Length: 198
Image 1 (cartoon, rainbow, N blue to C red):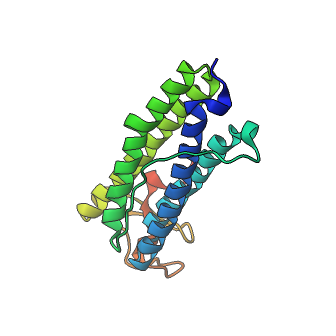
Image 2 (cartoon, helix red, strand yellow):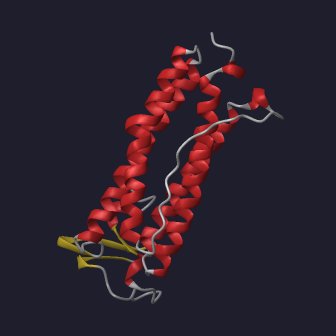
């Protein structure tokens, strides 16, 4: 087994911690753009994903406990995704999540296993799969926005107000919630609503 202190895995953990920390901030910033564009549902998606990125960062950071009190050098490249357009930010987020899934974390997981850190390798591979889910989610919302179907459906479907929980069926979310008076941006397709009993 490779000495952890001098391993590439230790550097990869720090790179991943830095990347997840930056992703969390980028998604928090993107949530602010979605809020300004009156898209609270997309804001919630960015905030939800930011919370999961924070957890990933904490997992990676926790594996560095053996190096507590030391500095770990870890170079890397990180995206700069600055836009005042929610669609641009969704597309950029999708790209970054797929890159983590397709390339980065799979490679880091393979290296950890090669260096004798099987558990860390397993976690890298598992988080890679979660990043794919993130990318798919960002893709879905970007596609709905692009097709102007975030609040309109081809067939009657259920719509839920994320503010008060009001649910109705129809081909379009109401412009204003009839219960809490919040704007259309708070509505989500019922099948995508969080914590829904299936």
